[in-house]
View 1 (cartoon, chains in turn orange, green):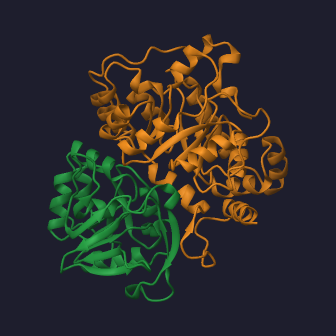
View 2: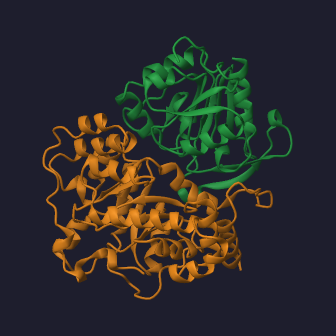
View 3: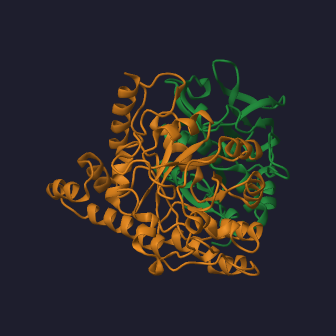
Length: 320
Length: 205
C-alpha cells in the first residue's frame, strides 16, 4: 500500500507546480519526489564524472566534480571490449563511496530492478538506469516510484523523457552516444528535447491530446510541459562530451549540467582536463574563460565518429 | 552605474546570488518575486554592485574551488566582514561557516558565522527528508523544510542565535548579525519567509 500511495503522490507532484503547499506531508518523510528531484537541483551547473577506481574518484572530487558515477568500465572500454555490461562490483562502489564526500551515482541495467535494489542497499546517492549497460528487459524499464533512492534516466527526445518521468525518474540526461568523444549525438538530443518542449508551449489546449498521443507520453505531463515550458525535473546532457568547449556547448544549448564519461580518464591529463571542464561549465557563456581553460590540456580521448558506428553499436538506441 | 550606492538606486534592493554552481536560479526567482532586483554573481565586479548576497544550495567543494580560481573568494570574505547581509542555504551555510567538519582536503570556507558545521550530517541521499519546523522568529505556521544531504550546526559561538532545531535538538538554522544560514532549502518550497527575513536585513543594512 505504501508503494501505491507513493506512486500516486509522485504522479500528483509531477503534475502540480512545485510551489504548491505541502502542509499535509508527514514529518521526516524520506524519498519524496521533492527530495529526489531536489538533489538533482543541487547538481545543476556542475559536472558529473565517470570513475572506475577510488583513485579516479579522488581526482574527480579534487578537480571540482559535483558528483561521480561509479562503474567498472567507462563506455569507451565497454564499446571496445564488448560483451555484456552489468552493474559494478559492490566492493568497487563501496570503495568509491568511502573515498569521496560528493554524491556517488551508479548504473543499473535498463529494467534490472534487482540491480537497482542492490545499489539502493549499497546507499548510492543516485541510480542511473543506463543504456550504456546491456539492457536486462527489452520491454519494461524499472518502476522507479517504490525506491527511496532517486533515478536518472537517458532520453533522446521529449516523449522518451516523459515516459521515464512517468515511471519515476527524478532527473533526465540526454543520451548522446556514450564512449565516442563525438558530441554530435548529444547536440542532437538536447536540441530535440528543447525544441519539442518549445513546440508544446506553442500549441493550443485542444491540440495537446493528439500531442500526447504522438509523443507516446501521459497527457497530464504533456499539459504540464505546455504550461511551464520546461521539464519538471533537471535535464543534464551526456554522451560524447570530451572538451571544455563541448561542455559549454551543452550549457549554451540549455542543459542544466553535464555528464562526462570516457572524456576525462581516457585523456592525456585527466586532472587538468576535469578541472577545465568544470570551469567551462560554470562560465559557459564566456569564450575568454573557455579559451583559457582549453590551453595545454594534452591529448583528448581518441574519438569515434558516430557516423562510422553500425546501428547495432549505437547505445542511444537502447531504451524506448 | 558608477557612483550609485548599491541597492538604493531604484528602491528595489539589489541582491546577488552566487552563481558558480547549484540552484541559484530558484533563489533569483524567489527574490525577484519579493520585489528585489536579484542578479547572478560569478565575478568580483558583479559582487561590487549588490547590497546583499545569497549563497545557494549545491556542492560546497565545487563553489569553494571556483570562488578561489576566479578571484571571488577574497572579495566575498571582504564583503562579509564589511557587514554585507549574506544568507546561505545548505552548501551556502557551509560556505559562511568559520569551521567545516568532514571537509575534503584543502577545502576552505569564506567564514563569518562563528559555527562549526558538519557536511552530509544525515548520511547519504537515502537519509534526505522533508519535515515541518517551528521557527519562532518567523511565526506561525511552521516552515516546511527540505533537507538534501544536509549539513548541521554542531557548535556555535556566543554571538550566534539559533533560529530552528530539529525535534532531537540538532541546530539547522542560525543567524549572527547580518549573516543568516539554514541547513535546508526554502527556495524549493514556495515559503518566502526566510527570503523576506533576509531582505529586511538588506534594507536596513
